[in-house]
Length: 93
Image (cartoon, rainbow, N blue to C red):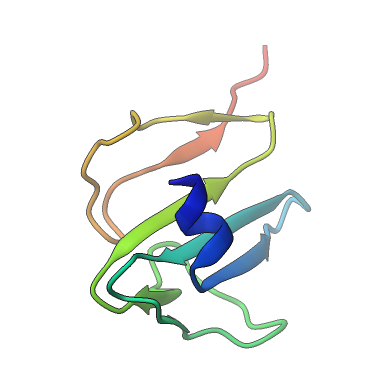
């Protein structure tokens, strides 16, 4: 996976939430795909579940969240676009 991230086309989208936290989504094209398409524009507001783009012929997406979030999925778990919750802010006592 590291080779794909370093060698193949990728696109990093930084999303600033309303609470000021920043979440990153990195789309990394695979060996066959080598093409990432981003649907967003700088400063565009997005909704939860809104498509960010696509990787032609698929590969991998990295979700980068602050330590204040808990991860809700396991490595290798299959997820559904716009349907599977990936992370949420940790509850504070």
